[in-house]
Amino acid sequence: GLDVVKTDIEKLKGNVIIDTQKGSGTKFTLQLPLTIAIIQALLIRSNREIFAIPLLSIDESISVKSNEIYSIENREAIRVRGKTISVVRLSEILDLPEDDTPAQPLKKDKDHIPVVIISLMDKLVGFIVDEIIGEQEIFIKSLGDHIGKLTNISGATVLGNGQVIVILDVVDLINSAKLSHPSFRRVKEKTTKKAVEKKRILIAEDSLTTRELERSILESEGYVVETAMDGIDALNIVSQEQFDLIISDIEMPRMNGFELCKAIKQNSETKDIPVIIVTSLDKEEDKRRGIEVGAQAYIVKSTFDQSNLLDAIERLIG
Image (cartoon, rainbow, N blue to C red; front, side, top):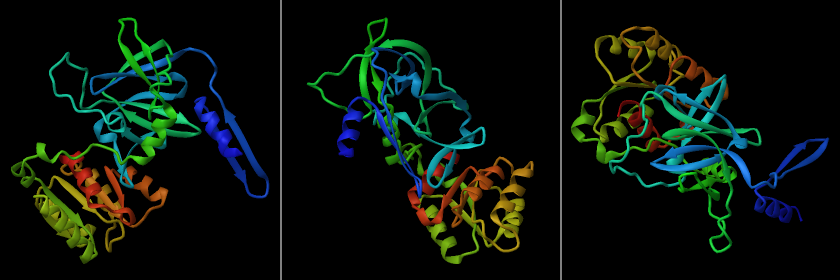
């Protein structure tokens, strides 16, 4: 009968938390919302649409720089007070259409990206939005039985100016974020072949097979590619030629990828070159160390997909 309990509680916008300890037992925690019609909410804007998120579920809202968004295991993430938090673009989760129609200019700053961090059952997910409007007390209005349950939506409200906006369902948002592959989609049609050909990439990889595979992928996209057999070889090449981006393995002879990345970031002439680590090391401490030495993306070979690598490159150098 537990599935019935779970179904009924979720209909009430609640949650069931199961905590099992081997040899001790299992604890079931049932979370139910207060039965009130007025709540505090955070109003945000995404693709010119305004949405409300219940304030109770928001851990914090912050502003991050574009270079503070990393790629770990093919997912975008940020570091907040020592914690790694996955981030997704809200417009992609809600599948909002792009709107290039001129309207009142939005407050957009490419170097400061608004992120709303939502917490649910000790899980934190950051949602990238276009603008954080502010907090407001809102009255919850049901969508009605004739509409039924809509994914990512829990209800609607009417603002003081008469505008009807949607209230987002936090549980659905978290679940949708798990299924999505964020973020920063590559838009090939906006990148001309001529522009791509100017981008030069260096690959540092001791495995001939992997090195040539990565070279083939990048050259097919129009990038100019050079290769190095290890970290020392890569440093010598970088000192003589200019590159827009470096892709490096970690486990290499003479100088590993961590040491290579650190050396690049400590050199005033090369510190601004983005570095992507592509490695078989998948432990959390390795991912954390990769970010600490300055890598902008960390891709694990066991989950390697060429579209993920190309997405990371597109985000970093366009």
